[in-house]
Length: 391
Image (cartoon, rainbow, N blue to C red; front, side, top):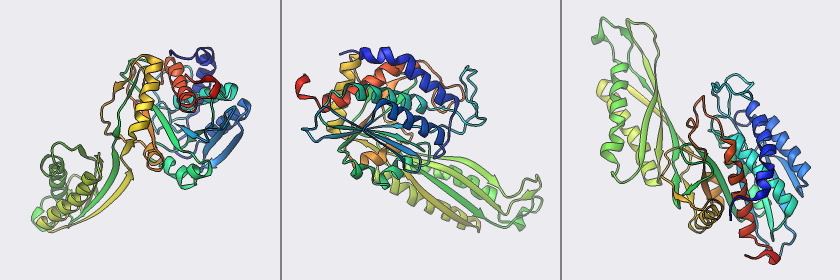
């Protein structure tokens, strides 16, 4: 079964929605314009129920099939938010908002799910109910968690949930997926070293926080190289180093370093938090200073469920002729919160030879729209087949 003909017909319309969203990016929970556009389109399509304000600015649409003998309810989720990046694509429809752009393709995800919602509202060729979920604040805000905390899964009795992300470097419209742990847990740390500041010409009178912190930056790398089992995935990255003084001749009183930890298991997550505290306390004590560590646990590991992953891959093969094994991804994805509440799967769809996500020259590839729309629609029609259209 190739891409559905209806989505080839709808491609120019879905592309226009996508480019409008791209031109007007909104960050985190500030997706007011995007959410309003989504709600307006769902109303225009004739959705049976439209609810806004789930997870602050999330939107949920309900589409009932021609029958409901199965009692099944499937959720389809797309993210809506942009990134705080200044766009450098030079496109006619480039971002009109300085310092904000759709650098991860959430504009494409939203537009493709709208395309699927339009088709499903037109045809209703399924036995059950589909819930289309448009989520804010995937990029670090935990909008998926907030929608779940608002009771979304129970309110609509969602039984399974499916998500999708475009993937630069993969052929356009191709698919890849993996069961089990897929995207990493994403934690943050903030460490302040306190010593005794003073004149750089008299280091013996100081407790040097720059030396202390520099030692810590190097020592933190031993968590991955010397503490973790080599077969487990863990990344510890220091990404910011800031002293309390900007002068060339002052040893600063304090230094603050920040960074991120990426892991694929709870065991490695616990190890990282424990060792960061131990290493920093130990180094600070060695030099006569102190260390204050704040460790914040962010998104959990995103885990695809086996049965739903197998089904999602089967649908992808029906559409594109194949579905590759996806690699582990050390980036985070807050669809993880939805997969903790309900079984489901998350798949990658090829974006072609484009700039990487989170890059100022990235742009979602509109040629991927028919494949993405088809996958979501087929998830519904194959998982909840109508009696008169059993394959």
